[in-house]
Structure formats: structure tokens, C-alpha cells
Amino acid sequence: MKDTKLIQIMDGEDDGARAEMLQKAGQIIREGGLVAFPTETVYGLGGDALNPDSSRKIYEAKGRPSDNPLIVHIANMKALPRIAADIPEAARKLADAFWPGPLTMILPKTEAVPYETTGGLDTVAVRMPSHPVALAFIRESGGYVAAPSANTSGKPSPTLAAYVAEDMNGRIDMILDGGQVGIGIESTIIDLTVTPPQILRPGYVTREMLEKVLGEVAVDVTVMKSQEDCGQAPKAPGMKYRHYAPAGELVIVQGQPEAVTAYINSRAAEDMAAGEKVGVIGTAEVLDEYRANVVKSVGSRMDEESIAHSLYAILREFDDEKVTRIYSEGFSAEGLGQAIMNRLLKAAGHHVVDLT
Ligand code: AMP
Ligand code: MG
Image (cartoon, rainbow, N blue to C red; front, side, top):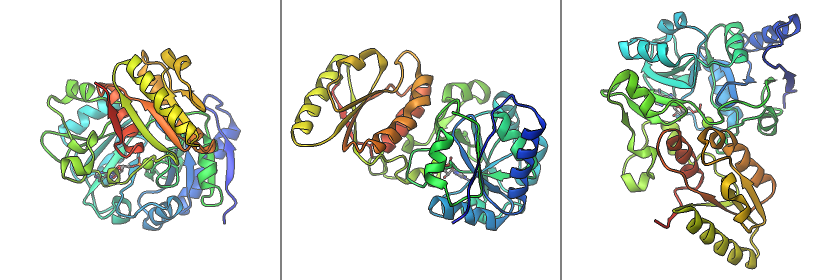
């Protein structure tokens, strides 16, 4: 067991104490330790991306299968050539448009990147986050921080330092607490080693946004379908695992709002009569209509960003409340909705009731 230090570090406080804490955190990484830090998407669990021992420690702390590669976080474009063997025009255009920000690019790796970091692959996933604490921390760490989401493998990604502590206390050296994250779901991953470029994981940067910059962009079919339904494994090795699984059984209900509410209420009544503790993930507009043990608002249907922002916290809260059955409204798979539905479908093991 390690003594995990929890350090408060809010943006804006640009004083000597903040600089000193970031230096300390960077020193831990340079010496081969692990530090969790805030990004604009979710909290990351950082280690030195160029040190194979650090990557091994990350897998161990998360209980993550070691064939599931890590994203390397950089703080400026000058850092890219050391880890990417080829930087195509498309990468430069995307960097201009979306970096720093919630976009991860897959590029061929150089020898500087150990196979421990890439899960044995000859490609490397790279992102430049926009969170000021993340950028300062990466600079202090030597410029290359490998960081998966800072949760135990299989749990929802953490959107608060308290959730990182829940999963990682005693397993890592330090947690930088920068408050609640902004976006709430992980970065979009785009593979630039294929033509046309292909989205392996949807995120805040949508297909429409990418196509404006690149022209045609494909989407890995496994993004919205289960492996059994499409008969192939996801191209991002990590997407094959059942991520974000809540402890209770989760069912997504798609259809017209009134039909969805009525269906969920009737199933909830049956389940509660059978002794289940039932939770509902609903949108603010229809929340009052639900009858279940625990009803939570995931945000407004008019504002998909609010839904991305709350989803993981709600899944964790249902676990804390020991809910055994969860019903969630479904969302349209357009724009940011594609990322939201991708995460919900994985959490539900693709269990969907379609009333349309
Ligand atoms: P996380 O670190 O939890 O955000 O997960 C990182 C995701 O990026 C996982 O789904 C990985 O499989 C994926 N990934 C990382 N590196 C690569 C790569 N070189 N090729 C394809 N997918 C990758
Ligand atoms: Mg993750």
C-alpha cells in the first residue's frame, strides 16, 4: 500500500505554491511513479510514457489487461516527432483544429515508445489535452505522460477526484484534485494510419466536426453494435472490454418520450414488486413522470453536453445506492449523441428495448 497524497490544485491559482506542487508531481513521474490528474475529458492516471516500468505500473494499478494500449499525452507539437514516426498532413490539420483538446490520434510509433505503452502495437495514440493543470503537469513530467482514465478497469471513468480516490487510494503516489472535469466522457479516437481515417471511439469531437477538416471519415462498425452483432472485434483493443459496467443490470429504452416513460414505469413496478431496487436515468424534461426507487436526472434533452457531463457520476451513484436494476432513456446517435449512446450501450452490454 502506498500513501496516496491528495493535492488540491484549481486552475487560475497561479501562485508559487501551485508551481511547487506541479513540480513535485512531475518529479514523481520522472522517477517512475504514478500521479492522477484532471483533464477536460475525465481524470487520467499518469506515468512516464517512455518508461516501460511506469506503463506496467499503470496496468497493475488499474487492473487493466496489458493488451489495452495507453494514450500518450503531450503539451506541445514540438513533442510529437519523438513518438510519431510519420506525421501526415491530416494530423497537422486536426492538431490545428482541435489541439489542445479532446481528440486522440493514432499514428505509427517510433522506437522511443516502448511496447509496454502501446500494448504491443506499432502505433501510438497521442493527445494534447487543453486543461491547464494537465498541460503544466505534462511539461513538469518531461513531456510524455501515458494516461488511461483513472478508474479501476471496468468502472466508469472518474469525473471527480473523489472518484479517483475511491478506486486508486493506496495504489498510486498522488492525486491532483482540479475539481469536476468539463466534458465528462473520454476523447474521440481517430486512426490516421488507414484511408479514409476511422473513428475508433466517438467523443466530444464528432464525426461531423472531423469531416469538416478532413473530408470523408469512417466509423468503426463496433462503435454502435455489439461484437456478436457485427462479427468483428473493435479496432481499439480497449473497446472490446465491457467498460463502465454498473453493478445493477442496465436496460436502455428507446422510443417516443411518453411510450418510454410508460414502459419504464410498468417494468419498474413489476421489478419493485419482485423485490428489486430500481433506478431510472431520465432527462430533466420528463423526470417527474417516473415512479421508481431512485430517479436521477442525467441532464436536459435540449443540451447533450449536460448529459455527457453527468453520465458517469450517475452510474457511480447508482452503484453506491446498491440499485439492482436500472432503466435509462435512449438518445439519438447523432453528433455528441453518438458518444453518449456508445458509452451507455457498453454499460448496458447492448441490452436495448426498442419501442419504435
Ligand atoms: P483510456 O485510456 O481508458 O481512455 O482508453 C484508451 C483507449 O485508446 C483504449 O480503448 C485503447 O484501446 C485505445 N488505444 C490506445 N492506443 C491505441 C492504438 N495504438 N491503436 C488503437 N487503439 C488504441
Ligand atoms: Mg478508460
